[in-house]
Length: 60
Image 1 (cartoon, helix red, strand yellow):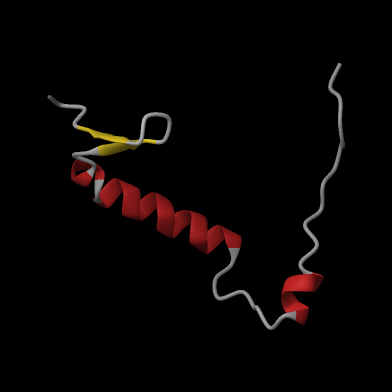
Image 2 (cartoon, one colour; image 1 turned 120 degrees about the horizontal axis):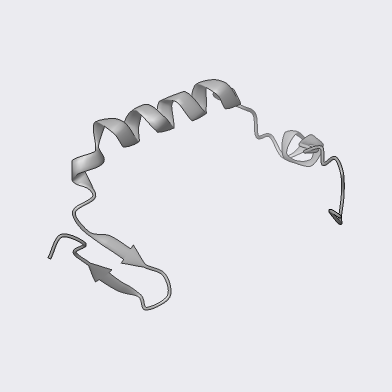
């Protein structure tokens, strides 16, 4: 049985009150992110490990 909230709704009223506004919608942002990762798949030569704070070369 799942526990926790069955539905979560993001409330952005505080961010709007501080003057922040959306520049891109979620669907377009997700599509642009996927496109960028596909276009730069070979550019991930080095990966940062957040657990060891080390930069590693996965192809070495």
